[in-house]
Amino acid sequence: MTAISTAPAATREALGRTLVKLRQDGLDIVVVDADLGKSTTARLFRDEFPDRFFSVGVAEQNMIGVASGLAAAGKIAFCSTFSVFMPGRCFDQIRVSVAQTGLNVKMVSSHAGLSVGEDGISAQAIEDLALMCSLPGVRVVSPADVVEAEQAIETAARTPGPFYIRTGRPKIPVLYDDSYRFELGKAHLLRPGSDATIIANGIMVHAAAEAADILSQEGINCRLLNMATLRPMDDEAIVAAARETGCIVTAEEHQIGTGMSAMVSQVVGATAPVPLGAVGVAGRYAESGKWTEVMEKYGLTADAIVREVKAVIERKGGERSV
Image (cartoon, rainbow, N blue to C red; front, side):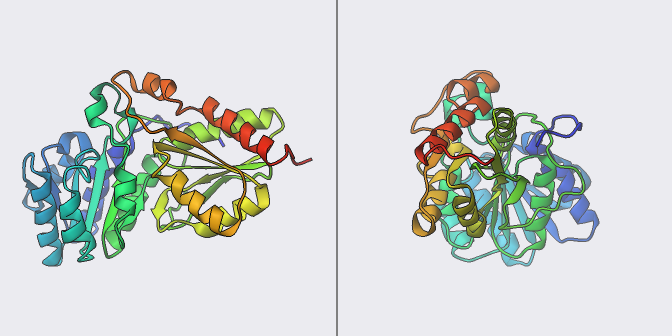
């Protein structure tokens, strides 16, 4: 699986233009912003529908309260800021006002993970998926590219109840074209394989695709799953991968001990125990620098995935397909 020829784009670019289109289609959308609408692209909605856009300033807790009130009044309420601020700064408000009520609030957070680059340690959200997945009833999505992000945002708008969608700062390769259809709660098979499975989401899907290409050249046949939806997770796809390929490696831009790796491990351990490996943030914060260099230094790369796949194949006995 390689990227299509479309120019690279950041997943955060999906928000504003998708919301404009959905409002033009007649959806009763309102947007609450915490002073970062330019970076999240929510400001595009403000420019088209200023009477439906509410800026609360640097007050993320208030943003959740306002969005919840609008949702209680029957609106499809979107709110956006950076992942380090939502859920980082307003987890209690999300828990009480959104998750426990089940209100129709859609939280779209940008600038997640280590790929914030020069913004440095204080801006690195490597806990957000764990926090949001801990809340019953909240659907959690980490799209692989801008096409999937657009479709995930539309799915959220058209599906009642709370959503958290994680987007990123850097421009990355576009994997999908307009024929792709995002399905909430379903992993997408990017590549079949029988020697091992790589399960990735977000920015790491492209790195995983590169790793699968490298391994293929060495005669290792890897299945590749894009696990964009973390809640609800596609347990069926995980169990099938474990039973049919005999080992799994996860790849995520998040702490491996509390993110997708931990969640996949729970499913595998309870149903089809096989050797597991993980590529992600290993229990520490990073530092400031160019985002590609930060990802390289902390091992969030295709080469790291290649090494981990070889290690888990070795642990299952070294079998390969013929």
